[in-house]
Structures are given as C-alpha cells and as structure tokens.
Length: 510
Image 1: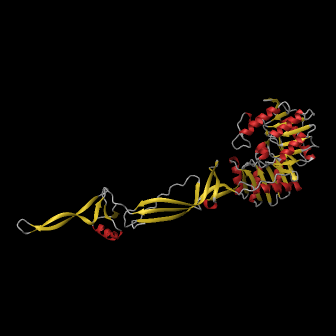
Image 2 (image 1 turned 90 degrees about the vertical axis):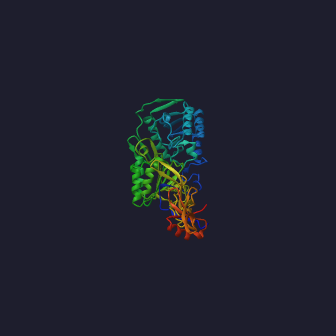
Image 3 (image 1 turned 120 degrees about the horizontal axis):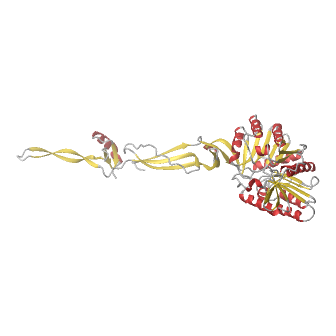
C-alpha cells in the first residue's frame, strides 16, 4: 500500500434479516425396524408386510377381498392370478378407484406418479376376467381379507403398489378375527351398493347399479369407517384427539387447515398439549402445517410419508386410509381400526422411529442467523425455494477514486448481489480508496513572471514570461483546477499552494 492508497473494510451483520417460513433439514438416521411388533409392521425394502399379504393370498381357500385405491405390484398380481387360475373355487373381489384417473393425469403432488398409474391400468387389464373388479371414485380404503373372518386380514395405509410397500413411510395392521368380520361387512356393502363401474373384461368399465340388498353395517367394535351418511372415522379421530392427556402424535399425507379435526388439533396445541405432526413436504399441505406449527406443534417433514396414523398418551391409536381432509373424513369410502394396549404401544414406537428419521423440521419466522446450511423456504404461499445459508461472505468491492489525494475518502461502493439462493450471517466488505490521477487531457495552468532586462537606450526594462507553477497546476476538462504531485511528501505543501491559486484538489502524476 502506498500513501496514495487507503485499504478499507467493514462487516455487515445479516443475522437478524428475515428468511420466512421453511423446512430445516435434519440428520439422517436409520429407518424404522421392518418387523412385526404386536401385529404392526412398517413398509420397507425388505417387503416384510407385503410378503405376509402375498402368502395369505396364496393360502386362500375360498375368498379374497381386496380394496386399494391403486394396485401396481408384480408379486401381488402373481398371487392373485395364482389363486384365480388354480381352480380351487377361490373368488377374488377387488375394490379400487380405476375410473378416478382414467381421464385425468396424476397431479404433481399426488400419492402416485405416472409410472405407477400406468402400471395400475396395465395390471387391471391383465387381471380382468379372472378377478371381479368394482370401482368408484370414492373407494380409498386399503384392506386385504383372506377367507374372512377365520383367515388372515390386513388393514394398510399403503396402496398396493411397489413404491408404497417399499419406499413410503406406511404401516400394515394384522387384523383380529372380529375386525376381519367387521371389515368384511363394510367391503361387501361398498362392493354391492357403492360401486359405479365393473370391469369384467380387459379395458372395459361397465356401469353398475346398487344391488339394493346389502345394508350399511352398524358401527361396533374397533373398526371405523367413512361411508355415505356415516362419519364414524371422523368421530373416532376427534375422540382420540380429545382424549390425549399430555401428548399426541399424528401422521398424515393430506391436511386441510379448515377441517374440524385439524382445527381441534390446532386448538389442543394452543392449550399446551404436546403435539407432534408427521407429514410429507408438499405445497397443498402447507397452510395446515404452518397453522399447526404456529399453534405450538412440532412439525416433522418427510419425502415419502403416506401413513395416516394417530396415537395419544391415553393408550389409544388409530390406523386408517383417510387423510385429514373432507374427502376422507367426511365423504368417500375409508376404513380404520382403533388399537389399544400393546398394539397402540407398537404404533407409538413406530412413530418415534419415524420421527427420528425425519427429513426436516418446519419452522416459522426464520432469520438468517437461525440457519446454517441448506433450508427449503416456503415462498409466496405457492412453492418451495431451496437456499443455502453460509457463515461468511467476503466481497471485494474493488477500488474507488477519492476527490483529492489529500482526502482519501469516498462513499462505500455498492455491494454486488449475492448468487441467487445464497445467504450469509455476515458480509466482510473490502475495498481500496485511491488518489485521483491527473487526467491526461488536462491542460497545465501557467503563471506570469516578470523578468528584468535592458531597454534599447541601455536602461532597465521589465518583461513578463509565462512559466509553470511549482508544484504544477492543471485545469481539467470540467474546469476544475488541481495540483499535481508525484511524491507523498509534497502533499501538504501542494494543498496549501493549490488553495492559494484556486485549486480544489490534489492529484497524482501518472
């Protein structure tokens, strides 16, 4: 650094600057143990629950009843074809929502993708003629019954697709004989009275009418349902929420902020109940999840969670196919089962394992200082933005020219915008103030000096001569007069001399 330069630096603290609402990533942990515990088993790569269901279907002696919004798993397909072709007199009845998507493409944030949807349609066509399909847009329950009520039965949160059974956070419940009998009655009612179409041959959905002889079951036991004119599942959910003493855990794929069940959870969180929410990170769920977080609930985010499960410290759990939305709690065809004792405790353990493996935690009113690393921000109530918050940004603002070499002062250069999606706790700004350099187009200002000489008659005579100033003065193109110096020790003298001769600044000779 020379006397004609001044190094500058300053620090800007960004920690109090707002970021908004967003998902803070969590450390990855081991997945929940994929094993049966009190008749409860999560989905997973090992397909433990799927294998149990497939073996049960293969062991069928007279009847298989299956309900799933989607059906797209090769091994389940094989098992259904085996019993259909075995000439053992096994009848196979399947409820699904085939027509719900035949004319409509899957939504980006829906529970299935295009590949799964196409596999679902292809599987239905292969099974048609061997398995009796009945469909309705309202069918959303996920159940497999084999030779009910004495055979095996499973209620799931998962659709019977490979992705759901292997990738998602889902749960399967092994049903008791009494629960199998109750669900059999609900499935029979939906099959004969609620179906809109039937597929008896590949690719052909034929309209069907209600049979008129199957009555809606009388609610009893552990099984709850959503069906036309019946909201037992909603009432069971509200009862579980209201019965919580100090802790409540709720997992769901779909969330509707204004639904009474969600509003009751929000209310209880505000009252001090320790509420933990497990949800898939998706735009349509954000209004409800933000309201829950603002009420005091802990909201944990997942990439693939699809389970609909609730547990309270009153020792009660509920596993269901229904999302916490009007279509699920208020209408449609959904099934659930209430669990007590050891089975409820097994659900609590599973939810704890899932919570430990969360992808992220939702926080509201984030500031830059509260984050270090990646965060997924909720923007404009519509979409997510992935950003990174770092500790320090060093910004070299370059050089700035002072007005005069005797006053190395200048406004701070404008800080360039940071790269999109990057924030910093602090910014270290560095820049250099330099003395102005003489403009090469400037013209030197001369002064008149009287020189003594002799006249023609031998007397004394004065003569004026134009000579440079010392130190030299120059007039710039804009009219400003400056003093030019080449050494730092000239600065003080140059400033005084320049002021006496109309100069307003000192510059450095190039």
